[in-house]
Image (cartoon, rainbow, N blue to C red):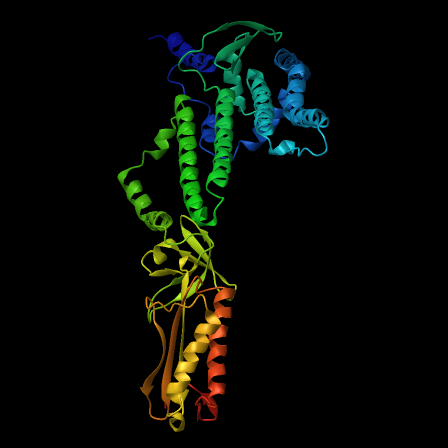
Length: 472
């Protein structure tokens, strides 16, 4: 090999490197470093390219590009139909019904079915303004030289590979513009083309909107057909929860389908490995348990929102209160002290529940004590006391034998004679003002009977306190 050959070799290699013909060459070090960082080396190039992009020629090209897709008539049509349709029909409704006589009751326009149809139609048009703005933004971003997110090296590569036309995807059609910004005949898009983000945004936007409309229509139907009677409020709440979950699930599946068909591969986000699946299962175990418990309690018809319930039984932990909300994860209960208790559904599932709001019977039970000196007056007192109680609480007191109606001498104690009063009532719930008024009538009848027989109840004083329950 001659010296001239060896001298020409480095220059040829350098030329290949400079013109990019050598397939074994590597990118510049700045490009490699920038591609391996998140912010370092990227902030200033971004602003620099942004400032360089806004030169007069590019702004002129942008203006011509928008001129071909933006029409003021489109914007006026959206604004008039979206924000003027409802006021126009409201005025027309008033004009048409203003000729009616004063005796005729005119239903407000907002309560008519025509208003519901026009309102939702106008709302759909209002959403189209967002789609229109996204279209304009995509038109701007489709300009090759107007891409402000390119680094210097990427911009140089783009300049070498760009042709005399700029391409932009609009609603499944590829629109091409020449150097002057004029559209050229379109060609069918290839299967590997970039997703149409404008059409994708419109599909997702209207899918979410339709889900909200369906939820409102569902609520209207429940109020009309199930919310008229109070006893059906809980059933309406249950159906409302189930339909909300169904509407949300359908909307989510439609959105995932849209993203998958657009080539974004959203299903790959759910393809977790065995370790990830195990961690997710363990992490959501309690959450799923609460949700299942909430669904079980809602469908079991044990209690609904607004019911006054008692949790627990016997000597165990008990608490009472009004159910404020019954969710999938937790239940809120307001106690008699006005404190709101939030209890996880999993803890309430295994506790005995007494729904006092659904019970139309109640009981009044008292234990009375008398002195041994009045033992001969006791039989007459018991007869008078029972008659007075029946007279004071008729017609709610149960005297047909299906429930106890007792005023009896029940026991001897070391110092007293015990008398038990045990009476039951129907048509009165064990809560509320009516229950306490009825109990007060029973207590007043007891005291009236004691006064009629000139007797006094026994009270044991121990340690300076007045105690009627010590039993000594």
